[in-house]
Length: 451
Ligand code: ADP
Ligand code: ADP
Ligand code: MG
Image (cartoon, rainbow, N blue to C red; front, side):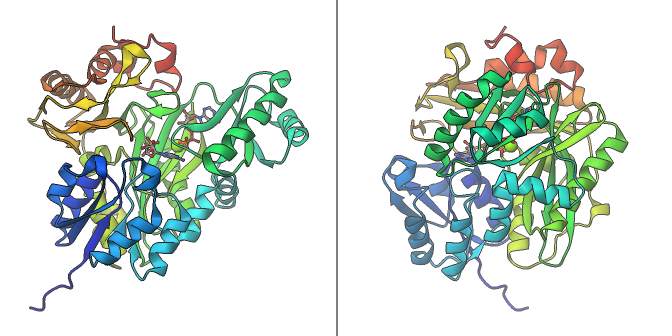
């Protein structure tokens, strides 16, 4: 038997997703190299990796966002592949391009595909070409006059969106036309400052919608499959708090339509790697909003209900191998919910709560999975995202998953930082949530503190 070539992946990220990629690499027989800033020198991902490189000081701009430093780490440690994780450089076409130019393989789609989907206004056009319904809206509006003309068609309330926005940022609601001019000016300035691109477009505000997204994966052999959907409607400031799979109460016919629309869009652009196609669903109507060209924070719930390893599939695709499954192999089993445990204080308007994890007793038991970048004694530092852990529970059905969730969240004891755990316990006790199918504004309309 000839030995498989050694593949070595640079994990260009931190926290739980860095740990997740290292695990998948090892299960695929690959080696993994971690990177870290000064603040993360003693981190869990550095310990779990086969090798590690410092890439700079603590501020993300000077470390995890520094393309030169990341590429230098990859070259210096003899890596063959680079996995971007999510956030940071994960949706920057220039990063994918630079990785490829350095003679390494990027774990994800090509720079061209990232570019065409990363610009949300361009992605809407591609969706229309693929026959996928989009939210009624406009192309890029150059100035206030163009925005006024487009708004007359779109109607109020509407959203002004930054074409380059992401992470819940770069979106602004406009309720009446006398608010429009000011909103366009502010949105343009904000988008230029935050994303380096002031391009804006308009979308009708869909007020009673659920956020339902479809996991897709394409390989280099022309296969594109979906792994069903996730419901991520429980949001605060357009950021997800918890997610579940499958979407509760989604009619089978609508599920078929949405999943095939997602596959159609991915196939249209020759998509390779893992990606997520996001939709708003209102009644029986569904509208494309955007595609994320990377692994998603909430991918584990899909892994639980489809019994797959999506990060391993990403690595397989990057190695030029076909997907390990065909569409017919992918079936839904039970229900799963993910709770984002953030170091934030829900009683103080979700103010970040960095500090040492003095206690960190994570739950386990049947159907319970905890993905975290930290162990007891670790530090939640103020420079980055406040995600401490993801509690993921699976059950034969949604009721069993939620019963396991209540037990798991109750067992989860964290001391040293304030977390969103109690908020999640109050959410799963909430009648509206238990009934299933809440909309994207539900959480903010409900009282924000634990009850
Ligand atoms: P997902 O889309 O996987 O549910 P999020 O929307 O929470 O996840 O975003 C994933 C990560 O990427 C988070 O850390 C978020 O803060 C970050 N992120 C996403 N887009 C941007 C962006 N344009 N600028 C800065 N951070 C971003
Ligand atoms: P991001 O790139 O920041 O994730 P999205 O376009 O995915 O931006 O939108 C984030 C969230 O904002 C959605 O999940 C939804 O709650 C809300 N949203 C986006 N577009 C609309 C719309 N047209 N009408 C109502 N809500 C919307
Ligand atoms: Mg989104």
